Length: 450
Image 1 (tube, rainbow, N blue to C red):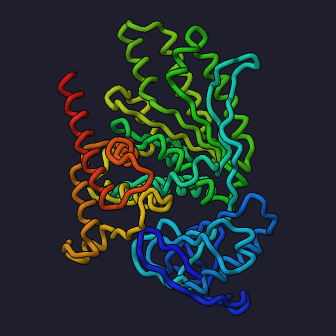
Image 2: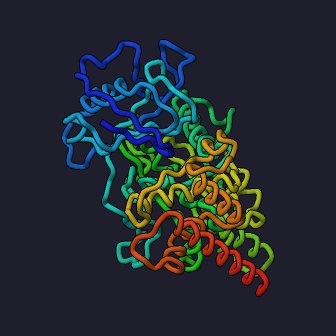
């Protein structure tokens, strides 16, 4: 059997053992991630098990067979993902088994504290929340989590300085404090996250990915997740005359979701600066007092729903100077999301090229080295590292482009400079370099025209 090692060229082959022979007493599974009871120094390793939609297997049976798989492949380095299995039960019932969110270091799984998260994706897609039965336009979009639509977003987002881990730790602490009945009057937390930064850096996608990840990570605690996305622009453009009343109705709908204690509810207010910008304009006399009532209603509703242990409020902003203190004070986490660094860009391009090779648009397949592998080699050029170093130079040139532009660039490279069904990696890298030059030129022209 072969298993995939994400972001690495390592491949290993193992023989299949019987489940009973693989179960070791020192490999312990914990339901809620924090510490292993028998070894407080053990590293916690998260294992995400995606079960096929048609599977009728019991969770305990899935867990047993996954443990057997992990016992057979006890030594890992970084994030691993199995998508093919030589064991009938896993092949029939499981889509993938992934070791996720690890530090890039060797791990002996038998000395680790394993937290296994078993889940199935909802493929119902987006639905709408309407305030009135005859309402044409929706008040918000709504997804059940974990959603097939959000699958893979977390892995596609590349940030530095542990941004994603910090956000996971924040929500985990929120749940932990609620479980311990910590008095919020003595120790305050509002369940509000504010992601701010320039457009195109993935703030909204990160909110969706965070909700998806937590619905999986807390699957032993909550049966499913609910994700509600409110567009604050429509709040003002459509509900102008009765804004305050209709905002209250909207949060009453959200309250109905929160009342289901088996659900973990995420509320996203995108571009939240439009709320505070309207209030500032109203104070200046350029907007009617109705705008103030809207903002006050929203802040009041946020204060009310924070009392519930199963809700997290996620907000984004592109224009931080327009966010007033009344809202900023409510945000527990104020995380800046900026343009990616050269190393992050390299990793983004690496994932894009891997996808194109998987789809055989780039052919034949070529193994590109990771930045860590290049550093280990001292960035010396040879037959193995040549194309990876070219990609590194392209990534350095791309610094300053938004994450949205970076993800679009391989498509533009193919459309504008390749124009053939398949292409070699060397030729595609040339096309990417041309596409980057074009993007930089267009960005400069746009700035000059302004």
